[in-house]
Image 1 (spheres, rainbow, N blue to C red):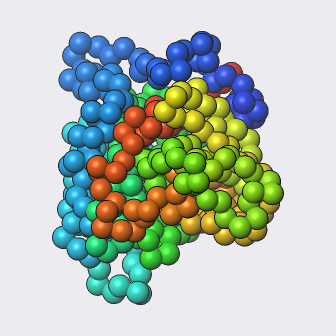
Image 2: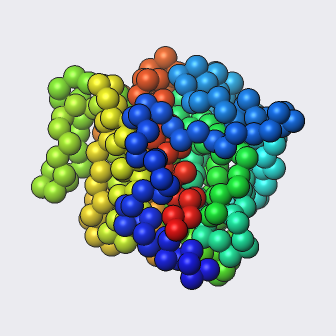
Length: 339
């Protein structure tokens, strides 16, 4: 365990997670280990993330997934079925909320074990519920399908560190699923916890000048420009090292249709800029756990936020594909034992 923790410090200092990782082309992801011919899922895992693979998942994802609706329940069943098809056992983690008594709520979690029971623990998340009357393609269908692609690509496991993939429920009414998950985190798991990468509203762009707004006061310390053409990678000061690793992995995808902007210096738990707290990662900040948010900034850019127009047709799939590949690269770095 001591060697693993030393390796973690090196990793979070931004060193390469494996020989040759940083020499890969910007558009490529680290390939999974070659599987044996007897492995029926090898071809599924080895197929890279593409616009077509993301589109196929977005087309299958039920729309209008607000709590208690048929689509909400159908989404939960679809996620479990899809993950099972890739050989992954999805755990259903029910919880209750007094605001909607009798409505079944549940997080969905996949655990990919590390090399040892006390291996460091990394988590990636996305919420699968939506507000009423919106298809929810960007919020948060984009995060849901990127997390699914991550599950598919890393489903073989075999990593030194443990990976948990979590689809949170009931984010929209108040970060309820993530709060329940963090409250249930055992002391042992909290001790092993490296951090969370939260995928939230990742697929909308508008490259025209004047389309990107910032929260009041943010421009004093952060100025990405006024074009809505970037993915924001944001963390608080306590998560700065984790944010740097994730930001570097995403920056390897930078191209004419994708760029990442990193802001890793939020003091405390982000209360100075409340807009940075508007997703499940803030439940982790509030409990002293490292967490990073990846987002297209939602209503600070998109006119479709929480609207009936939040449809697949409004998404920038080349942008989302680059983001997904960057997320995979980040995950592979974080679950590697960089000894």
